[in-house]
Length: 577
Image 1 (cartoon, rainbow, N blue to C red):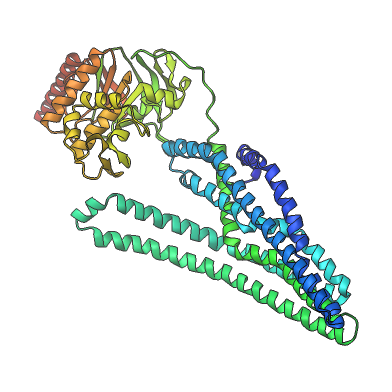
Image 2: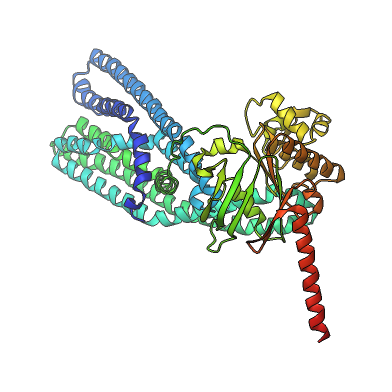
């Protein structure tokens, strides 16, 4: 894609980089003096060969050596400070974009399986590593290469021509490296990413793989992907390594050639022995930035790719707009002509759904598998945006609430429960680092999970892994239900809430629903089991993404039974004929 397509994203990256403009200027100043002090070695050699050896003066040698010691010490100190500044430039860049990139990555991943979103933080880290690496310092040293070449030419034109020819050859090698290594490096990065995703997928389902005897098959599947990644990495490393070795060999040869040509000119009396040695040292220094850049070319390529990927991500996901804070809503939800198209799909999963939920009501959403119940739950929580129609909370459309604020008003128990690494208290408190103990315990008691939690080794402070660790499916569902009820949300959406619960858990769930209704909150329950809709006042029936009925529970159930009997009578009559 053309760079203009991602202009907003590029502008954000450039604006963050410009915040360190002062630091870049300081790096430039330090680089000026570091490179200026690089002349210490050549000048010292010229003085030793041309003056000290000729005059055989030990005092001159000692004075020159002490001066060189001081100058090299200053050069090392300035180079060290320059490196520390570069590290802080990279850290400032990453810190300035961490929240923006993380937010964009989460928001994009919630609505689409986008590879750009999956690598957002990794791309940012790749840019930070380049900014903090010696490669950026070499970029500040590169403008000195022509100056050193001119200095060599001042000793003798032939030496200058040799140095210029060597620099041109190395630049050509660098360009060839960029052309030939770009595709292998990109392919290696893609293959490695696929292998890592496969490994994480297998690790996350390790229990199921072990119990069903799939370990061998899983390993062979991962090994095939891993072999491809290793093959691509070998090709990329061979390509880049070949150019790096060629560059190093050419640089060493050029330094020796400089010595040889200098010796020939010295024998003819056209240059001094000191100039011969100084020219060789200057040659190495002039070509050092090019060699360093080639040696770290994989890092450069990865950072460039990350820059473009981040620009694309930030363009696709613009920053959240500031919203006027709305008052605490009452539990009134209104759905008007709602149509939802799942991310990555082209056909709507829900079409023209209309219903209202009043405070203190519980609505049961029923229908066959794949009818769109979970899609409705995701649309009501704001996770999926409507393709048409609106969802209103207390009269305001959902997009009038900031996402984090909206999440405080909704409690959501997804069909597939996922807990996070941390304590049970942190999971119930929605990953808050310092959970409010009273709110955590209150939510657990509402979910009838308090007794279960306190029986664990460390109670609410029990540490669990991302998959729930030692918790059973029913225990995980109770903890997730407590998380949905944390901090008294006004709307609670439960997607198959009793799928992993025993009879005691189902009774506790109905008691929690009754308590929520008594407090004036509203509950929506997507369910297959009749026990889950026991406390429901209204029923919404969805079939193949279309709303077929909505009304009081008993009336809707009677109509469904009557329709079912009529269909059976019609079918029987048809069969009799």
